[in-house]
Image (cartoon, rainbow, N blue to C red; front, side):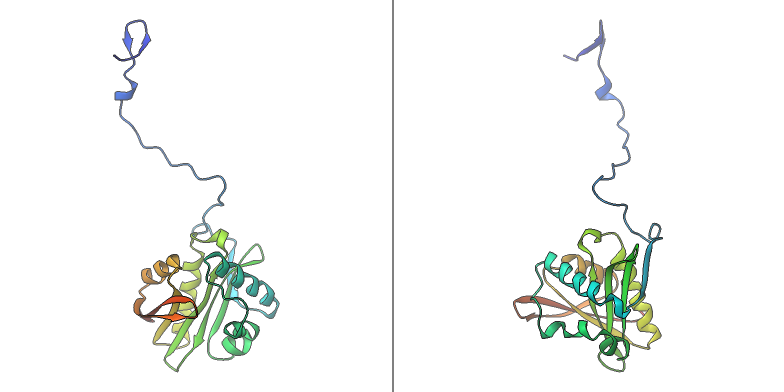
Amino acid sequence: MPRLLRRGVPDDRHLREVRPRKPDTPRDHPEPVTPATAKTLTIRRYRPGDREAVRNLHDEALNEVGAHLGSGPWDEDLDAIESVYLEGGGEFLVGTLEGKVVAMGALLRTSDERAQVTRMRVSPNLQGRGIGQELLDRLHGRAAELGYASLHLDTTAQQVAAQRLYEKNGYRETGRGTVGPFRCLYYERETGA
């Protein structure tokens, strides 16, 4: 039997049309950084003064997904960014918010026609807000400027968000392998993709 609001009048509010309401924005997450709201995001070329922030971001992002081997020869390029990337026919970009390095990504020349997209990192507390996409777009543009016909990259199996980003941007999986304790996926795309 329906509840009564007033004497003899049934409560039929549950039968009325339900109109969807705008979902609440979680209060503990900042506004997503997307092209429309990224006014304070700056993507620029690496500078020598960024070295420590780049190293810290690299460690933080890999630790977050359990893909960090610790310091070793596999990270020596981060101590020689100028010679490995900038003077070697590649690029190294950083994304900053309010002056703080929160993202990074690079192109490493692997032949006259090919470059590797590498060192893609976004601060864990800012992932999923479009920063990685903006950075990747800039790297794609720079690869075209440098005359590369194709790009390749690798990522670990546990970096599912990175896999989705690359696949969404026209990368196709070309193989799988193991590097140290990690299962890796290899991707490639033409620069015109």
